[in-house]
Image 1 (cartoon, helix red, strand yellow):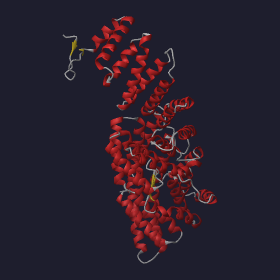
Image 2 (image 1 turned 135 degrees about the vertical axis):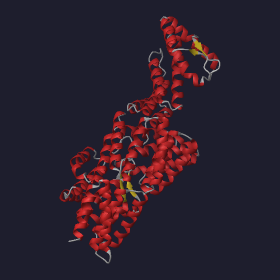
Image 3 (image 1 turned 60 degrees about the vertical axis):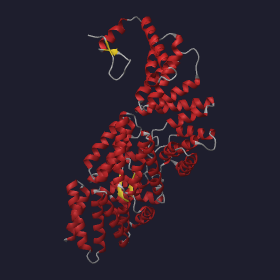
Image 4 (image 1 turned 90 degrees about the horizontal axis):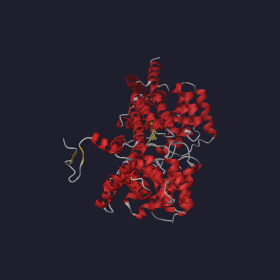
Length: 565
């Protein structure tokens, strides 16, 4: 039997016929002979590859690493760094992590410290950590950015600042002041134009989604997009559009996300394609275009299968849970939310539990058990003061549980604040949750101001398309107009909500629309209204009974009984 063989697909190269042969021969070598053998192989590879090792750079790194004489140290570091860079380029972050860590360890043994090389290795390590789901990436890259600033190295300061970004804000409901400080410093040191400034501006706008400085976000985003377009590089434009995306600006979100997705598909960068598809799904969800949401989720799914990056898998999984909310499939929505929680917890995502809590609240709303969650939602609201949507959800939970006095107290607090809710990505969620509570309380004091604030977004959906979806805004506008006795407006809003829910095959939102529409017609009592109300209640009851929407089922049944008394 031959000890070595020539692989069919590698002419001129040989390997051992069995791994045991290699292992036995290798272990029989003493340390010095082993190191010399590695050195000879490394030198032979250098002679063969020249200045362009290409795919064999990993072999060179391994052999020079094992050739442990001091004279070989610099080569081992250099090839390990090159291998890390190549692994990142090849979308193999686990391999890159190993090479960069190896190079940093070797660097600590070098007689002289190369500060610039140390920065490059740290930035590479932090990037690989981020892509493999290691939460330590944040501190690695913050440290690299600060050391770069101390050295006056703006190029590496910018590189570290841009690498320290997981694809969206660091944690929902909060501002990462350390990252913002680094980004502001980079802006201060960069010239007034150019691609780096565009990218830093866009990243800063993304980090300022929440908090008092969020009012700066639109201006930063638009400046970034303008600079990127002036520069004219499609790859930079896609990155900036993905970073600067703002779902509150509905029309802008649709146009920017469409442009980013088209260009990302053309460029073939899988990371930017995933981000573009994610942003596009948010914009499409806000517009009620669920077919486009599904198309984007398919793109994201294919990318996750290709790259296998844990953070992307987490995002995709909770996005799919939200899609199940749209369908009104509470079992699937809960299953996927739990799966996302596990993935996010395993990789140390700081807001995995918050996102799960938000998704569980929507599932419980659809099932009719949201009132039971009120103590947990109250705790979430206290723990996340930057997310007033939880307070709105608490008001709705009280109303859904029949505790109208407690719901009214929270609505009165909102009234005292002049109905002012921060205009961030959770604004819609907060406003429609408060609206749901106001509709059940039936108090015009709250209904009027809420309707005025939501009316400009008639025709859109309330959704973060991320964690949650609350349905067509017209559903809530119809309910608020009903409380105000503006029945013609309410009728039009409900018709719009019913049509939008039907297009999306959104069973829960369709049933809730029928329930509230039937209530309005009962109150109005015009010609044909009672019979139409009966039909709507019957339809709502049947759908709720078939799909497990407890509160809608009970309220529709009660409404039908009252019509017959």
